[in-house]
Length: 228
Image (cartoon, rainbow, N blue to C red; front, side, top):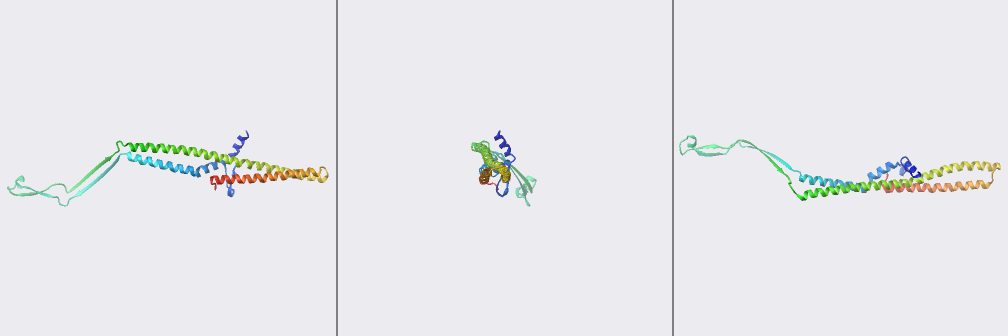
């Protein structure tokens, strides 16, 4: 039950970091996941694998190319044919032009990889590698979130402990002031005052130690995950 209460507090209590910047647990988890070098590297590897997949798929996709050509002949080439073909006297030749002055030619080329084992094996290998990296990202993200939560809890407990100590100090200071007044009136002995003073000093010392631990824990979190 106490553990559940601490987890509940984690959702609402912030750990104070450098420059008075405060992070809730959810903010700390998001920041650590977004700035983890391991996760970033894995994401780059995923993008690289995806690029390889697309590149190999592009090789397997049929490629269609078209071209359009236009030709213009100001003067068509001519050939000499026997005149008798056209009713002219025998032994004469008539120049005849062949072809068109303007022509358009269209070409359509289709290239496709019908079967290349290397291409398809390469695509499958790249897909398997990409899926593996994605699983690694998920595992790394889980580990980062777990470690941040663990460190956050480790910083929250001494912070709550210091809060309790400070409340006890405030209450004991009131009791000490009242006891000193009673001592002045002769209702209590000096030993009672001294015991309270000693207890107050012990509480203040514990509060200072707790404060140092809070600072160290916050600095550890800041250094570990490079919080701003």
